[in-house]
Image (cartoon, rainbow, N blue to C red; front, side, top):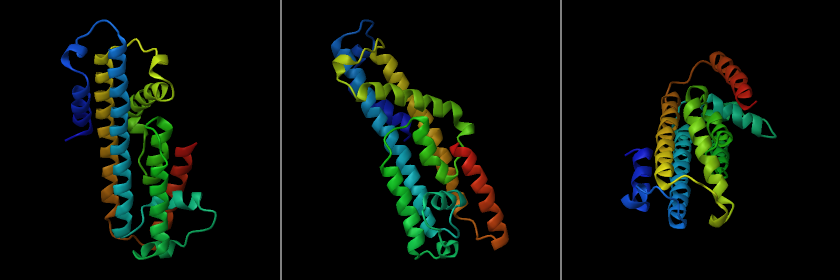
Length: 215
């Protein structure tokens, strides 16, 4: 199963064939579109966040902490992190780093570009190759945002349910590619520990990359 297929199944369980074929807007059709938007957005957001947390938790069993999340922890922390302790799987420092990242994910509310950057940068996921998919999710998230903070009667969409269903499925397909990029980081968490000097060079490089990513 994919996010796109889950979203498609959800959308088609909400919008019946007659509504999908409609050519004239109505209050009922607008309500169906709203349900598709809000619930599909929730499916997509949950899938991305779950992939982020699953990847971060691999740190607890990996040979080395992933450099990007280590740099993120150093930048977020008011005090220095003992890098040596991060290699001890029982270390409270490592558990706290993962717990802090999970708390960051739990505080997330959205799939717009700034949300994705906040979630993925600590994992070292480069958003540049995903720019088209990030834009798709950003637009879908913005459309949902227009609806989420106002009554349905104030939502002046002219798009029919068929358009919203297609947009939701497309956003789900983009989310699948984002999740694939997150999962691709799993292999980086299973490599043998490199020599200390090499690790220092990698951390310095990751620090420069992370700084560029959040600008």
